[in-house]
Image (cartoon, rainbow, N blue to C red; front, side, top):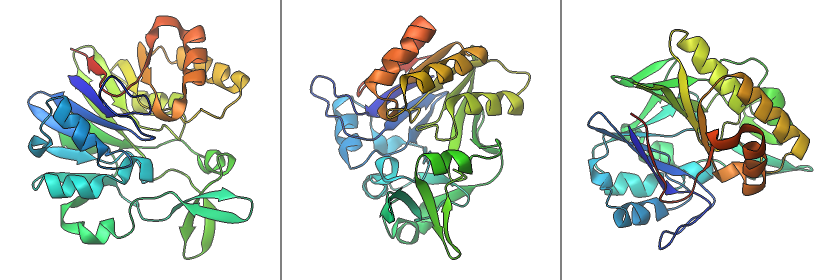
Length: 271
């Protein structure tokens, strides 16, 4: 399995970065795109990296936020064959609360209607193709994390804290163990690792790749998370985007060489 970061906050040489994430994954002849960043920049960087996104077989949205979904329209226009897999329940209804105000942070308005024939809503544990699965959150009480992060869902009944039921993990079975992609890990990086372990109790967990949404957390909170990750016995983590450089450095202090910083253009190979 080979994963190439098309977009991350950190730029590299002639590859531009932005607040967002997009990763191109090659696995047993299949080409999978995870997220599209916050613009069409992922397409530009893919061209520079020699990755032809017209050949993508499957596209996956990790969760329904703009910095992962705003390039969806550009992808649909560029690639005319791949379905885009969202978690069932995903909608244009995600907001950030500040004081009494709510700011929209969701998918492009109208995207679900405009490209409905290309969108598939994954339910339960969903097999994308052989060796690749989409796994929903299975941890109780995640709305408490949503409330702490001031993230809300707008419904017909009013505002409710986000429980991240629109977030999903993309999981690959490799000879070295399971590799988990979760672009923002809103439900908690340690919770996600444990969710996948419970889903596949006979498998070992090789790596978790994605942001951890801890860029605004205190040093103590980051260190506590690092210890919980260590307790899962995972072998490696590759993190960036909403983790932030400061938090990534703290994670590395606690976890050592098992921590790797994501950046635009980074290539990750796992046998």
